[in-house]
Image (tube, rainbow, N blue to C red; front, side):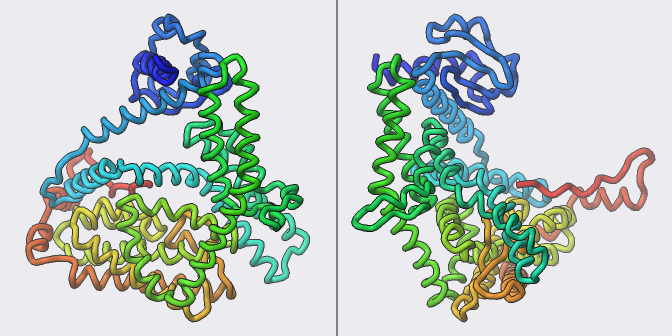
Amino acid sequence: MSTDDKNRAVAAAILPLVGGAGNIDSVAHCMTRLRLGLRDRSLVQDEALRALPAVLGVVEDDTYQIVLGPGTVARVTPEFEALVAEAGAEAGTEARAAPQPAHTAEELADRGAALKAARKARNATPLKLFLRRIANIFVPLIPALIGCGIIAGLNGLLINLGWLPGVTPALAAIASGFMALIAVFVGFNTAKEFGGTPILGGAVASIIVFAGVAKIEVFGQPLSPGQGGVLGALGAAVLAVYVEKWCRRWVPEALDVLVTPTLTVLISGLVTVFGLMYAAGEVSRAIGDFANWLLAHAGAGAGFVLGGLFLPLVMLGLHQALIPIHTTLIEQQGYTVLLPILAMAGAGQVGAAMAVYLRLPRNGSIRRTIRSALPAGFLGVGEPLIYGVSLPLGRPFVTACVGGAFGGGFVGLFSMLGTQVGSTAIGPSGWALFPLLDGDKGLGETVAIYAGGLLVGYLAGFVATYFFGFSKEMLAEFNVETEKETETAAEQAAPVAGRKPEPDPAPAKV
């Protein structure tokens, strides 16, 4: 039996004894232990686990820890994670359901859930799984990007107003510290996502931001601290993972704890310094130049296409490819010019939902869902409206994209006219993006253009949906009194003693 087969056999023996894949919340490892987050501790068969030849002991703390020993645990953990992922994918495929006729909001939501599950199953292609991994690297960084972005905006406002001059340097340090070291966090998350030791990925990526690289010349030019940015960190950490796995395969277990981390950092570090930093720096510069050129010369058309296609990209999972681009632009310019344009897709969705509300005056169930989900939609959380209303209905989803296209074209037009609108962080959209806005002109002008784009998106989505979002057959099917609405009306007219009317459902959280 090969080493890989042996490690997979150990993982396969452990998995059913800890309750199977469905009982696993998290998987990690330290120097000697496989650390598992469990949903139900009672499903674990402790004695059977201890009886396995590869298991040296069991420790119960905040996680369930299975002692496998140095070297072994680093080889078994990726196999264990792969088995858990495979079991989850099989369960997701079996859970798919065919769409059913819908009239009420509950039936419409079921149809939306079925579409979402089917989309998730179809997304299990190599490209989309890779993009999902990229998203898993950057999404955990979004809270820090948002927090630091808002502080940076507040600091800029204070500087422009001339207020609190003694505080603004401190705010600048707080806002900039994370961005100065973001490469380290990207390297850490990359190694974790690709099955390596996270701290080794962070160690290799930290070379990129180390000030001492300015003393190194590559192709006759000195390197700059931060050159290559997040793309360089991503590449360096992926390389570190492959070097580490190669070492795990060939280095004897007795020497693993000393030799593997040394070779991983040394080999990956040299390649990063003398190749990756330069290459990633050129790619990053090209991305920034192309984004600025595109919006300066074809901003209206580019904004129209990007705003109109963003919702379908989200449905296909391809929007995740934009996350490193956003982060690169923020790193280079202080803001991403793409996010405010893409945020217009949410505005089109809101406008479409309001048109659906007016076009179905008799269907109280769907109208109640829209009332509940609209506040979240205004704040940029679109899933309740997408999966609860527009996507199951079909045509309103297309007309929502039309609204996003017109909103994106509006913001892009002003880029052509010389005013860039950007966001200092990724994640929020809708009204939630206002505190993060920045650009190459004054804040007032930037806010006004973004607000104008939202209004255009709302209006275009509403008009397109009101006039083109429903066929006669759809109106006949959906514009009917629903059983739940009739019952609610009766309850309001003559409430039964001891029974309270049902409250409106809370908007779903994404």
